[in-house]
Image (cartoon, rainbow, N blue to C red; front, side):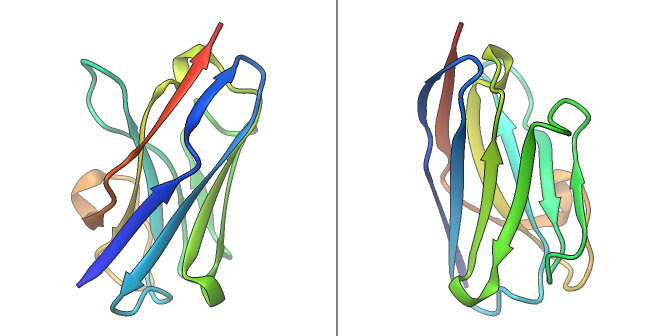
Length: 125
């Protein structure tokens, strides 16, 4: 069993920054990619960013590339999402999740088997 807990969400003005954390516990974490997704009210959950098992590879959605940075510290079983230049359209609940296949990385929600409970990010204009 794997447990993922997100933290770091909050209210920020447009142009501001937040750093989200995803702390994992349970079975082996370091062999798996981890992704961040978000879901705004009335919209489907969408891919934001993902990082490979050793941090060497990262993928981003076009909407956040250049503004968000994903990283991980395997010694702490934690993945981070640094969000800069935030926009009102970034407002959503942000979820982290584990890619279900070790040593691979993807952007579709169906690949991910364990999910956190989410953390709210609100960007005011």
